Amino acid sequence: MPVRPTATRPRPTSLAAPLTAAALAVTALTACGGGSGSDPDTVKVSFKQSTDNSIHVMDDHLAGIKKQFEKNNPGKKVELVPIKAPDSEYYTKLQQMLRSPKTAPDLVYEDTFLINSDITSGYLRPLDSYLAKWRDWDRFIDTAKAAAKAQDGRTYGVPDGTDTRGLWFDQGIFEKAGLPADWQPKKWDDVLAAARAVKRKVPGVTPLNVYTGKPAGEAATMQGFEMLLYGTGDGTTDPLYDEPSKKWIAGSQGFKDALAFVETVYKEKLGPDVSTALDPNIQTIVRGDLLPKGKLAIGLDGSWLPQDWLPGSGHEWPDWSKELGLAYMPTQHGQAPGRVSMSGGWTWAIPAKAANPDLAFEFIKTMQTKANAQKWYVANSGIAVRKDVASDPAYASAQPGITFFTDLVASTHYRPAYPVYPRVSTAIQEAMEGVTTGDLSVAEAASGYDDTLKEATDNQVIQK
Image (cartoon, rainbow, N blue to C red; front, side):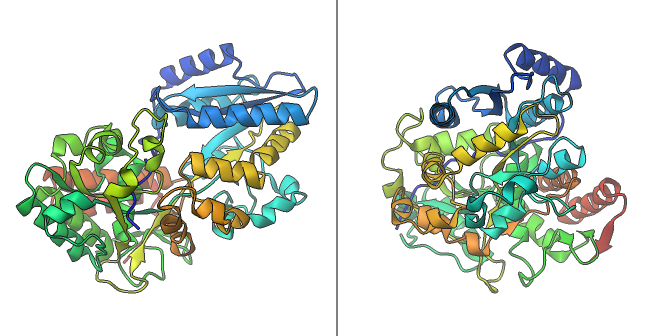
């Protein structure tokens, strides 16, 4: 069934922000109640607040959970401590808060992109003793549980949903280009062929968007490059990290092939103008302008896009499910399993220096009842990580496209999000940017990545 995508919760851009800015941010947060303090009856919950003033999905959801928690726990209070910042600044501010008992909240919202880095830094506490006594933990899918598990074998976060990725396409543009309404490419060449047909027959629109370069951050790495890379090879081994040897992979043909695809998109002018592609706001441009206004034919993007198009979002698009179609991203040559998806997501974690960890876990349990989890998945255009929600007909019918994206969970891939991964991701973005602008050839960009990879991982690299 044709569907319009959900807007991706913006993914991380870069790891670092100026320390002075972060320190100022912590001061501001402390002034507004950022630290755990010493009140044993108050749980302080810190989360990422959207920088788009028209989007209040998380704020509204947590306000409802707060009310429910305080009603069910007389005498207990919840203090919400939002951090309003772009992704890269959010991570920096959060890490600054976690360093001291004076500023550490009791509960924090952690992206799986960085959770292992924070675990290694000693900022989070393991939750295994709590999880062992919580019956609902058995209802979470294993792949989602693994996303918050560290190399020490312990679990440090409770996932609040996951996401998957695919191809969104504009059916009106496809009709003008002579492409089928039930389009399903079988290999990469089919995606490029469709984009070329749009360029020839429907002038004035962007044929294909693939996020690229450092300004797009993790969106470039995960929605763009990894959706290509994980479709190379035979699909049985991770193309970024070799688990048996515990080393990162350099010199692979799949890496070069993925770069070559990106190079083709921008060299043939099938993608946005390079200046637009490298705009830090490219995700907002895609989901708030290009797709809703019929200016983009194909977008390689995430399951969350519709979040920005729902009533009250500020970018309402009531007809998105009638105007957009969905297709799986194919593997490079159509080899098994024939389709590719990447998954990430966010977790709720308890800081090592939290003053009220027990109360914080009680708040997690309230958030993650079946009813509350299901409400959040739908409001956030997320994908269920509770098996009982995923099998509920009410969840499957709550929003167009949910079944399509949920079905991808069984065969999706997860990033090797070890502590060094953020640096690996940045190196990927640099390689992508080089071929996007034409400043580097595929061979030069791949070689530069290999050199940076060796430096970032202390030469823990296996050559393919």
